[in-house]
Length: 320
Length: 250
Image 1 (cartoon, chains in turn yellow, cyan):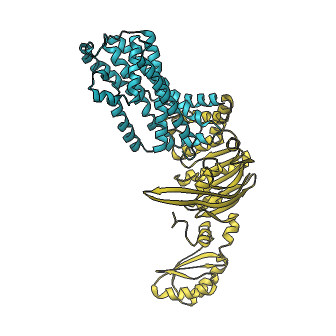
Image 2: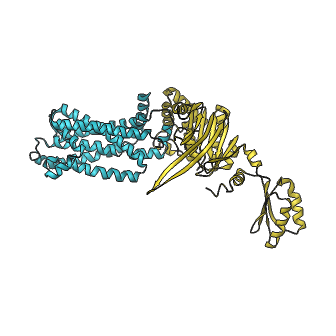
Image 3: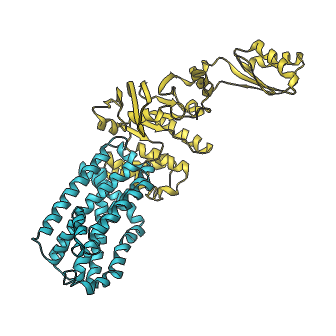
């Protein structure tokens, strides 16, 4: 569905007399098969949106080539546009325009007849829980509703391939969870291929078959969320102790079974441990023996955030 | 396809404009105020200004003012649309980029057609008398001018992408043009240096041409210059506008 080779984009900026070249995307190879849901994960400014804008014909690559939905990006951009749907980060509807008609007009720009576009838009309003909002100005919709309206805009022409740029940014947790259901439905019910960007790890984890991690314009990893998480060896065991005198003893005890270095922060000691759940009882016994007063203990499965940290040496949150 | 795309964009723009008709009225307010509150001052001066009817001098100026002011500020609406992501959403469709511009321009021309029609009608109420045929041709010329200005306004909006910069540019351009094109008083009463300066402003020639037409003088050099400048400006405006809409990353 997408096959990109060494796709790169530079931006030329001029500040006064000083000209500089910023490499937003440094040459990425992307392969997405039909029916896949692929996530593009990276911090802000990593090159996610730039890559997406290239793949959707909005931005010309500086170098490299790609076929998208079966057509060459450089020579057949109109054919590409006909076959893809794009839901951009910044929205797609005018605040004062009526929600339903925005979708119909958008469909008609794809060459669909008015009757067909109206029928399809009504159907999408139904599927995306937008019932009753047809005649409402877009600005009166809630954040979640407006985002779903954007998705309806991107789907009105039944594209084979849908691009979603940061679909849930700025939504409250409930609206996010709701939108996730709709995104997975794109494949389950419509058979679409979905390519989405996100800087939320839980989102990539919950939705995607495969995650590509992008940092500084390069793809640093591409695998299933589980396989990526397996790269991080062990679960993170964090324990808090009662007093400063216990910290050293707790660190030594934990170090005996840890697969990573033990870090201490005030009264909190943590390290990665293979199969945290299983080793917990032994750990507690050992701590008891060392007369360490434990106030809390927690074992956490690795998250994509940990993966990102392992791959890039930075936490995704720090780089935001 | 091109005409269909243009029509879809035009209809959408018109629908949105009609949802907030207040703006159409506000746009008309300024020329109507000029007509009602400034026009009567010109009546006793008509003879000195070289006209038998003061309103054949004044109404053409107001129509050109409407065409310029109404159309140059369309960029503001476009920046709002750009911010809402509408421009980008339209650009991922297979629709012609020129149609995205032209559909919008046509809506603006229609708006100025309605406002200008009302203005001329009011002009009659105040005492405008002249050649009806000339008025129609002159009005048409002003509408063609508004195509040029609207296309330029959109190009400016899409290039600057900031209301503040657009306001600065638009105000910086309109005030000298308003003063130098003889919209309020004909440049014929100006001292020589001011007349020479105003000769460099294309709009002055268009205003002059439309004034001749309103009087019923079709075959004057003023009309020829007016038509020539209108054609040049509309070609230039559409060229700049189309280029901006086609440019990537716009």
